[in-house]
Image (cartoon, rainbow, N blue to C red; front, side, top):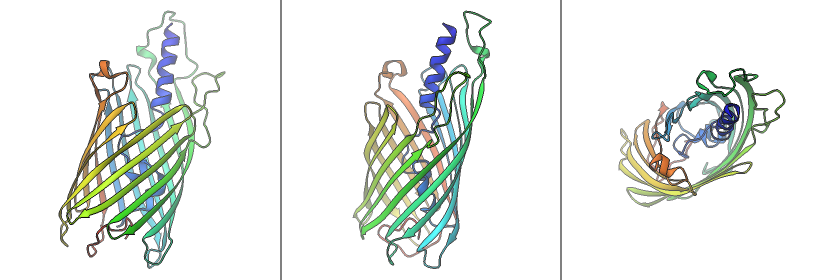
Length: 322
């Protein structure tokens, strides 16, 4: 029974923790789609995020990630360019400290589809190395002689993404993207005879931003992810209030809510100040675990920094690159 229980824990960890998962979908965009690694202005973009899930349950899931994106080449008029990006993350859960440490490198290419640079297409490929394992010292076994063939595993992953940005008019922009992860379906098992693999995961994302008033914009969002039999659907909207858009200062407040189908209500708030963005998200758990978790799902906190953000004359909704 001890082995069976531990196998269940490892299977749960495999389905939940092996692929990076955050409720945020638009703050650190490169975590949603690698093709967004070139969609920024300035000389670099850096992010860090921490997630704590099911804090009221014993030994909650904890995940932390750090991201970096830098332009490699841009032509004179920003009609096309190359960018490098990447992220590292680590997660940990349960009394067996089951967790993953991963690092991914992203190479992206973007191209403007017209001379106004208001329609931009981006493609990206990514590859990473992952280390997963657990500590069996806290495992309770009915037979002390029971042994696992390995406690740690290493495996590579490969992914790709495509994204499109369009400024439809002076007051309306659209971002849409598709991404695929684990295209190589790496073997993920702690037993020699087992052939379990990490399944491919697909992500579809859509975000609009409508500047409906001089100081306000509305930002509806929809996202779906599929990994074999598991499906995640998220939809909602944010509002953004532009407090100050002067030449020397850029200050805005963003807040909103989204519904993750049959799982949680997600509330978010962010403060944008010049090159910095600070954000916080809270999940109210609505799943079958709600009684045990007391409806407390997760919280996320993060910070984004744009290096040498270029100053430009105000546009109603600026292009993500220029």
